Image (cartoon, rainbow, N blue to C red; front, side, top):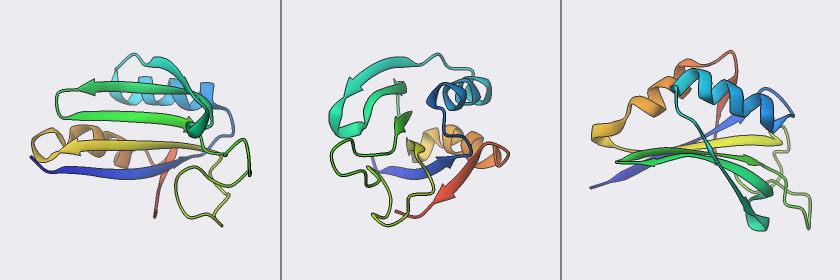
Amino acid sequence: MKWHSQLFGAKTRDIEVARRWIEQITGFAPEKRENDSLGGDYYMFGPYDGANICLINNVDPYDLTPVWGRETDTRWPIAARASWTEDRRELYDLMHSAKRYFVEVLD
């Protein structure tokens, strides 16, 4: 089974606002987690069978570079990564259609 992923930059600098947006978009409740390499506190929407979304503070606490995405692209201090298998693409489709809140980002 092949996995795909897409990085999205949030149009906010507040992870709690972005969390609420993803809850609205997907209808899923997040699990709050903590990991220094992912910018501290973060949220996991899933893992579900074949799809999930991870929402992070996209700033490395040690060198202040983005955790995800291009090292020189600091426009997205809050980022979400949608991961899915071919038969569970709907989470990507939901995030892709939420252009009011999120922007697809190259990484």
